[in-house]
Structures are given as C-alpha cells and as structure tokens.
Length: 334
Image (cartoon, rainbow, N blue to C red):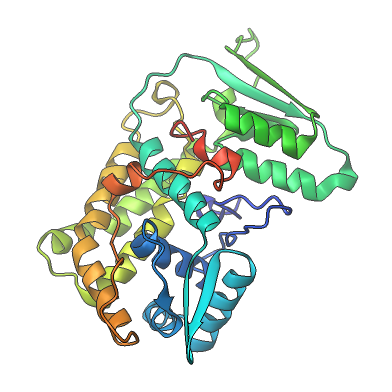
C-alpha cells in the first residue's frame, strides 16, 4: 500500500475547470512549493512578486533555476498565476480564482482539524454509477469525494461521517449528471462477525502512523522555534514543509468520529504542533521573504504578510470564484 502522504491530489482537478492547481506528488514538486510560498505570504493581498524573487525563494528550497522558471510558466498557463511586465522585469501574483480556492483550503485545513463537534452517529452515503468510457469523469468525481472527506467503503459506494453541504451537492450533480444517490443514516450491525464497518473505509493504522511520523519529525524543532533560533531561509523552508505535510491530514482523517477511533488519537497533538511551528516561524519567515523580494524590486514591497493559523481560520471565500465544494465539508468545507 502506498503511503497516505502520497495522495495524488489535495486540491481537486475536474479536468474541465479552467483553474488547475498542482497535483500532489511524492515529495515537493516545484509547482506545489511555488503555490505554497505565494499562498503563505500573499494570499490575502495578492501582491505581485518579481519573478526573479520567486525563483530565488524556490532556489532556497532546492529547486533549480530552470525548474523554478518552468514551474512559474506552467502555473501561469494553468490559471494559477497572473503575470505582468514593467520594462524587462516580470512579476507574478495569485489569480483571483486561485486565491479563492486556496483561501477555502486554508480555512478548511485549520478549522477541520480543530473541530470539537460531537458526532450524531450517522453516515452520509454516496452511491454513483458511471460508465467505464467516462473514466475522466470518474477520476474527477473520486478526487472531489476525497477532497470532501469521503472514502470508498465499496466500489461506487463512498461514505463520510459529515453531512453533505449544499455546495457539495451542486458539485456532485455537475460531475455525475444526476447519476448519484445520497443517503444519511445509521449503520445496522449484523449478527455475523463477517461484515465491514463503515470506519474500515479508512486505514486507521496507517493514519495513526502518519500522525506519529509528523510528531516525530517536528517535535524536536519546536524548542528552537520557541527560542527564536530558526531564522532566514530555514524559517521559510520549515513553514513551507510543515504546511505541505499537515494540509494532507484533513483528507486522511476528515473529522472521523473519535468514538470509533483508538484512544489517544493524535489529531489534536498534531494540530497543536503544526500551529506552534507554523505560527512561531511567521515573523522570521516574513522578514526573510521581504528581504529576498527587496533584492529584485525598485522599492520596498508592501503586501507581504505571513499568514498564521488564526488568519487562515478566518479567511473569507469569494463564493463566485471558489470551487463549489471548497466552502463546504470539513469545516463547514473542500
């Protein structure tokens, strides 16, 4: 079984929508790192950064100059970035659609892992049937269902402990052309010991190992973060990496009911560690990004702001620009 951190996509790509955010790949793809960097420091303002500054920042994460330029070009073609030129200097910023999508995702990442609402004991069941010749549509639907926090109990039968929101219903109708049925209800246990419980749609042991790996990776860094000993490019790299890793958890563990999970489930400790590192590095990381941008700008660049978990939790979403599912499942959320 592939690692749960190797999930193909976090952000949906339905094959038709003009905005196509990068697929999640094993490790850090240059396009994914570029989107994370711009989102972490320009999401609310959508300020344009000199392309040379973006290349330099990507270089500090190990991306080659050629790889960085290729990533920027591809993101522009995909509608994620908007380019502008002044003389010989080119600059790029997040498109309005990308900013709306990322705002929804940022809110969902933080809010869904902090939720303390009690489970009502019911499951939402989505059954669909699409012909084999509509493989692109099937992939798009499965990606959307993952993004909404669903998992396949059986082929064509996906479940979630959360209620299906109105925006998500509209998106499912669009992707399935009505070839879908949605139920919500409680499980009826069978007397036979040979049956599959809904929670088994998720690999609980693998998710637990992923939480444990996250805690082991980032806990040793926390004392140096608190002491203010992580600065410059190291602060930016750490924030980018921890966001890139943590944002996968709401898809792996979409508010699964604690009543059905092992004792001492690590969702809360992981969330608290993420907030402590991500927020603790905000000031030095912002300072470094400003310094790098200043090397390639004629004047001091305003609008560079390191976002914290509090800001992400309160980000507004432009309903006309965000994908329909993006306001809806895990936090009310994609």
